[in-house]
Amino acid sequence: MYDQMQAIEDRYEELGELLSDPAVISDTNRFMQLSKEEANTREIVETYRRYKKVVEGISEAEELLGENLDAELAEMAKEELADLKKEKEVLEDEIKILLLPKDPNDDKNIIMEIRGAAGGDEAALFAGDLFNMYQKYAEGQGWRTEVLEANVTGIGGYKEVIMMITGDNVYSKLKYESGAHRVQRVPSTESQGRIHTSTSTVVVMPEAEEVEIDIADKDIRTDIYHASGAGGQHVNKTASAVRLTHIPTGVVVAMQDERSQIKNREKAMKILRARVYDKISSEAQSEYDASRKSAVGTGDRSERIRTYNYPQNRVTDHRIGLTIQKLDQILAGKLDEVVDALILYDQTKKLEELQNV
Image: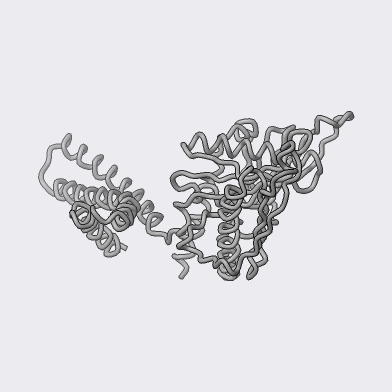
């Protein structure tokens, strides 16, 4: 492990020299690529350097204790040695986690699709609650959100809403949100106070760049048609709605939110590229998960992952057995406790796997 850490530190120092090279600075693409590598390596190197200082401090403290010290100095050296040994253990655990294989999608932006599922109007309303929750969480993280498509119901919920979230390491924090979310509450239309159970589904897909997935024009069928729904006379005069079909996979995306056919096509292509990339990645992941027991549920989109119980102000994540009596806070976008628990669980399982290899 420590040979690996030393190699990473050597590469980090090499990157520092490269990034100050005028030839690299003038090459924008290479400079950005190396800057990203340097940023991704920085935490590992800083932790390793601290670890080396602690190990050196332990050696010095043990050497000092071997000398003929007075009682007070000996006691101080013992306390320092004990503290350093504890820190060494903590740093060793941190290094193990930092060396875990990184999901190549972790630093990507995402496209999130939220749909009302079982439960009619109540499911659509809950889809709206989830949409608001993720928007508030994104705002708290300093991320940006953009609604790509929204199918609003008459009572204010969403049959479907698709948004893009951009920022630092978005996928790494939200990738565990894919699945079926269940709500238990008394609907506003319920006159006898009975608790209803409804579900909404969430799909989180990493944004796919053109360089990552090559979708040839010949593989896309494009249909142009008149938009339907709200929009006044415009929808009757202009054929601006776009439907794209990726023939090899059968993935279909329809977009009519914008008045411009060009803008609708741009949005549709973003979603299409993400869905095709996600479909290919999910199929590969399913094969991998068949021999891996630590999946937290990023693959099976029909899996019921979480229950939101309003009467008890309770949220339960069924994959990791986490129950929190803070439903109101979580729906207000304070998801950190849940997200951190899911990340820790996944890291722990991966560490167990490595130790059992």
